[in-house]
Length: 335
Figure (spheres, rainbow, N blue to C red):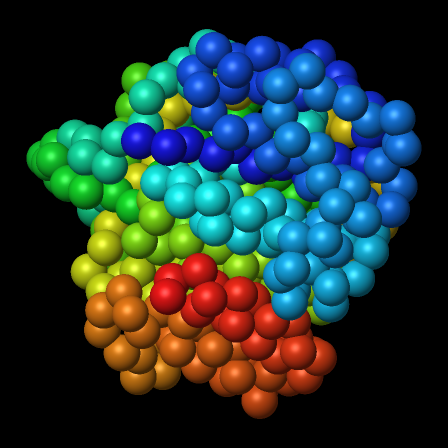
């Protein structure tokens, strides 16, 4: 099974990137690092492939020529490269996540996982992984759902999971509100736990996520929303499309520790405001859509969701310009 690890960075290789590079070489994974305008010109890897802006423009993807600089959505170029290079699995993370050795274990679709049983549609997935009970929630969870964190489980069942999301401990993916009121954050999560989300709704990020080839078209990160919204909104759309196709999503125990890059928390808060205000609206809008069944319709369903969000004023009309480029590139790869 061909695996590609994709990250984006504006920094020189740190200890995390160096470990990705070394371990990918040992595992014979592809390691694709997507740079941006701010990435140092002397960025070098011993094994992996680094793509500068110039390299990205030479890839002949429609999206790479249209994507703006200084955008986290340039990560889409890494996905397209792995897709075109016949990867079976794309693993994605960020440069401030330190991987444990378990991060590099062989990837498989089939797992046994506990099935969530909850009266609430939205669940705080972190609450299932706490070693001791604390009041903490993932970025993207609607603020009025924070206290609805009780999760129960049905019997553990084996299933195929084409999308698998791992939690990152240490300084995990929480929102700016949590960070502003909790100055010192060091949270430990359970390691040996798999959870089938089933029909519940969770927040999915791009920090420790495994995608199998059948669902690669759904990797698209929207360009015109803020960096703090892009992977969360992708996750809501992906869940809607996969649930329509009766494909389950799995969360698994921590295989990484985040040592977070410096952020201006008030800037993060400002970027997250559309997320606080619109996550539930997005769910309602796309839940009401009539989508088509089958993997061959994923790109159609993707565009249907974005068109509806544009029509409701959630996402800019400019998004279609970038989405069409993504769809065109995916269609060429699929053929």
